[in-house]
Amino acid sequence: MTKKRTIAIADIHGCCRTFRRLLFDVVRLEKTDTLHLLGDMIDRGPDSKGVIEIILELQADGYDVRPIRGNHEQMLLQAIYLPTKENADKWLDNGGYTTLKSYGVITPEELGEHFCFFRDLPLFRVTDTHIYVHAGLDFTLDDPLSIEGEETMLWKFGGDVDEAKLNGKVLVSGHSVLPLKIIRSTLRTSHIRLDNGCVFGDAQPKLVMGNLVALELERGVLHIQENIE
Image 1 (spheres, rainbow, N blue to C red):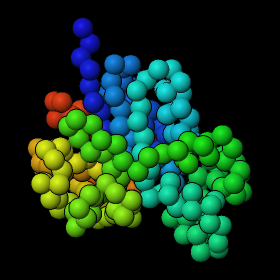
Image 2: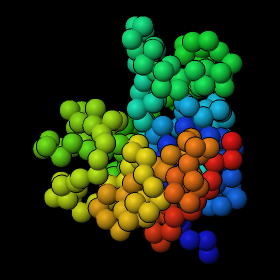
Image 3: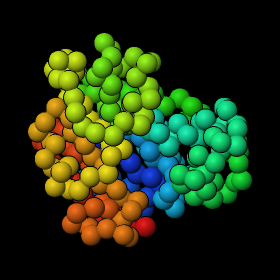
Image 4: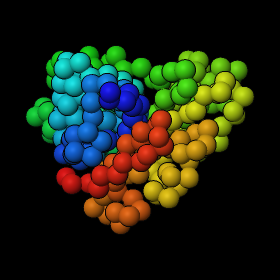
């Protein structure tokens, strides 16, 4: 009998070939698995459209894929919903140009059916054992998952947690680029952190940075795929 696995991946950032290799050749994703994607699936890397197409195809084929919103998806949505020059420039200056190029369009309003995917992304997901969020939680709030904590969920840097407010669960996040050694050191803590800066792979030594990683949560096994874009 195939064992059910829970897998988490953070900050794909348009690295479609690397994402595909990690999923199908390294992790060998099965329909019995649950795959959590921790936001920032788009921008900076060469093929954001391809990343979203993989996710949508997997969901259509019956795979349990659960993406959430990162600050890059948020910047895209703000550029659409609040189309000021400031919002447009903020997104474009943070990698939005590569996303538009991958879709072959000039403005974010032209993203077509994928717009609904971005619009409907939740800010977090909670299971019996884990809380999945892009960046972090604001533990100064009585309820870190309330709407007042939205900015922190998308933008927080740092790994400090208030375990009492986690209610026995483990927080899993990306967003803050960390060396593999630091990522491994978080795997048995109350805050697991999974961004190794895949999109910056060409400028980093692969044994330290520049990889896309996937964590099997039940076994604590970290799968590593170097950037192949």
